[in-house]
Image (cartoon, rainbow, N blue to C red; front, side, top):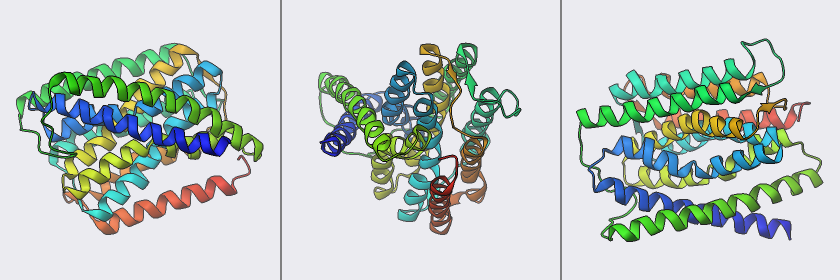
Length: 316
């Protein structure tokens, strides 16, 4: 029965996120927000709602490994797997602005997470307190403000990505509200059943957070990025990944640590290092202006290798 509930809750997550994103994008287009900002802010935050709910719920229930592992695992999965698959479908364009601002910001916040979690690399148990969380939240607010400020200076009409939207504002708002409601409910049952199943199989919570929960809550990002790649709108796809990763660390860990300080846990220095390495990859592989199909294949292989490491690790 647990498996049935798990599958149904995953479907609810995807459906809810899809409606949430479509409604949010429809609203954003009315104000002529650019493709990258739609991807980074609207779609990125919208598709990260599952991670937000799961980590917040994990913090509330005292499951530190689920709360932190979900964020770290999702960020790794987003870049290596989702962006890699997107590049395999269609080479991802990396603009000068992406290289000068967006990607460095993503790398920076990933490094900050490591510093705060491990108290300057001293290898102690993870400890993300309320002050650390407040720093993350301030960073998130600053990123949102600067992103919209940059967008106003370089206005661009948003192109069609998901579908042609010719609906009334009230319909778009209802999609956002209903989508979020279904998303929250689906995430609640997904985390509950995932932990039950994994515990029965003898798998610890760190592995659950880094793999099963992280991949499950990243399904909306996968759907949005693939849809963007099929329509050759890779700027939205890249924005979705960058925005999601920044949101995951700065807002989700920020909120989760306010609910309950995230102390202890089994997320290791290696996991954080892989997350930082994944954040650096798009900047390196896209140095010439695009992430090629070959580079996308390398990223996917990298995720398979990381998963193999987790499975074989004695810490799991």
